[in-house]
Image (cartoon, rainbow, N blue to C red; front, side, top):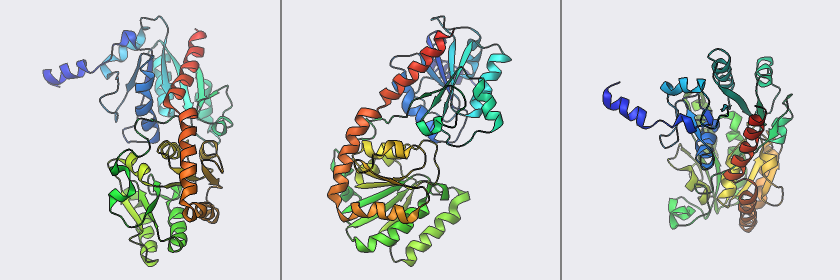
Length: 361
């Protein structure tokens, strides 16, 4: 590193004396966990000294640099031990190494979104934590340690109802009057095939609708995506069921669709229904992840058993038949998100956990 790079590195570092919480992100590739950190930390930073640590995060976030790790051997100016808030097993392990091998003055908090039985090693890690958070009641049922449920929130500045002509579906130049969307990585676990099958069955009956699929197709899942395109072409619907790939700004697409579908076979938490609801868009989802705790049936949308393609199709049908129903449920969804799922609510819930951990000494 040259002198200019070194100065830049030091200039971008946080004041560790005022930093009480570290949010590690020990994974280079973008994931739902990374997205949570990126959205949440700026909100937490309004009332708390917090810094991220690790690769793959934008420069605007307050950041602890690698050369600042020795600062963890001392407590910050408040006199309280710093909290290492892990969200992955690797981050729990890193926290334990820092505390027990390097004698870092830290307390360990973990957020669990998993909705499955944990492996023995994970159970052991969880028992070493000073505080544990579940992102939903369902994920909490798989925890064998005391925990607090703090559901994720959504950034209402980024995800919001249409404001300009560019936010309307007409701005895309695509056929149809209304759009139905399915966003996220294109793969079997996300249920993209279930959505495509539902569209192949329904769109011939509802000529005013166009289906839009956005999301990355990794090399591992290219064959899966190619097969979907073949099925769409065989049905003669290539102009009405569109796989757009990764888009620069998915938020605008939530505003352009009248109905959003989250057909996942399995999920951790699953943020996309919240992002749709914040955009005043009705939601039909599976019951994977936290979807059934987010969507209120008959009010903000509907949900069905994960993997049930027939049920998914029939849950979608009423909205295609009656776009006004979608608009009504979309408005109710925006109201619900504004009350229950603001990022500020999540930040406040995490702060309560931190305070409980600090109270233990």
